Amino acid sequence: MVATIRRTIHPAVPSHPLEPTHPLEPTQPPTLSPLCRGRHLHRRRSPPRQRRGPCQNSGRAVPSDGVETHRRLIELAAANQRILTERTALTVLSPAAWQRHQAAGLWMQIAPGYFHHSATLLTFEMQVRACSGWVGIRGALYGSTALRWLGIDVPEPHHPEFLVPRDRRAIPNWVTVHTTVKWDNGDIIRHRGVRTTTATRAVIDYAAQGVSAGDLEHAIDEAIRLRRTALVRLKRRLAGLSGKGRHGCALLRELLLDSGGESHLERRFLRLLREQGLPRPECQVVFKRDGETVARVDFVFPNERFIVEVSGRIGHTSDRDRQRDARRRNHLQSLGNEVIEFTTADVIDDPGYVLATLRASLHVRP
Image 1 (cartoon, one colour):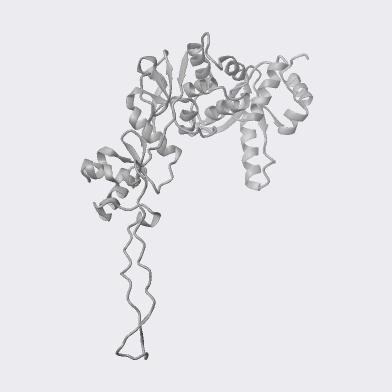
Image 2: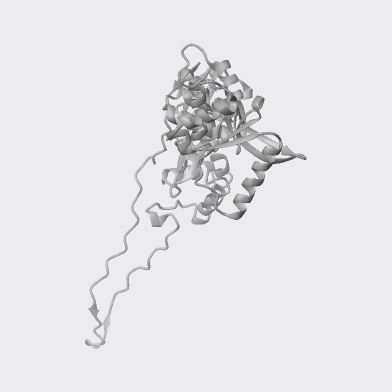
C-alpha cells in the first residue's frame, strides 16, 4: 500500500532585493572656453563607462570576489549537467563569499546543497538529478517520474516524485514522496546515474496516481515495446503488490488482459479475440535461422502453425521493400506456417471479416 505526502520544491528567493547599478552622470551642457572666444566648443567629459561582467548585463552585480571566480563556478556547473553543488562551490569560495553569491541572486537552490545559475533555465532533468542527489539511497524515482526517466512516453511531471520505505517518511519538505510498506530492492535500478524504480514497478505505481485508462494503456504498451518490461513480469509483480485499498489495481488488471502487443492496433486485435472467445496467441515471436533473426511477427497460434500480422502502414512501395517482405513471408511459409495480414481498416472497421478469417483458419465454429 502506498501513502502519499505532497511536497513541492520551492526555489530559493534572495534575502534582499537587488541593488540597482549606478547610472552614468548626465552629460553637461556645452561651455565656451574663454580663450577661444567662441571659435570652438568644448564639452566636459563624462566619467568612463563601467565595464560590466557577464551577470551585470542582466541586472545582477557580481560580488567583490570577482568575475573570474564567478566564471569558474559556471564552468564547474556546466561540467555537471548545469548543476553546482555547494561542496564544489566551497572549493572555490569561502563560505561567506558563497553566501554573498546566493544573496546576490546569482545561484538558485534546486534542493539542499544543489544549485543552478539564475540565467540557466531549470529543466526537468536538472530537477531529477539534483533532488535524487539529495534524496540519495533513501528513495528512488516514482511512477510517472520514473517512467519519464526511463524514456517511456508519458506526460512530463511538474516536479520529481520519489518512493521511499515507510520508515523513512520523515524527509524534509523539499520533494513529493510516496511511502510504501512493500519496499523491495528488486524494484530499484540505477539508470543514467539516478536511482529509479523499474518500469514494471513504475507502471503499477503510475496506475495508483489516478491516470486515465488511455494514459495507462499507452504506458503499458510503450514499456513493453521498449523492452523495459514484459506482460508476465507485470502480472507477477501486480499480484505481489495488489491488496486492499491499493488504488488503480483493478484498472491495471483489466488493461493487462489485452496487453502483449506493441501498438494500439495490436491491443485492439487482442481485445477482439478475447471478447469473441477466440484463443489468445503468443505475441511478438522471433523466428531465427542459423542463429540469426529472420522475422519477428506480431502473433502466432503455435498449435495451428498460424501467423497473424496487423499492419498500420500505408504500404511498402519500393522494390527493395517488396523484395524483403516477400522473402520474409516465403521463409515463414517454408516452415509450414500460414501467414495472414490484417490492416487497420480490417481490425477497426470490419471486425466481422477478421473473425470469419480467423475462425476458418483456426477451425473454430462461430
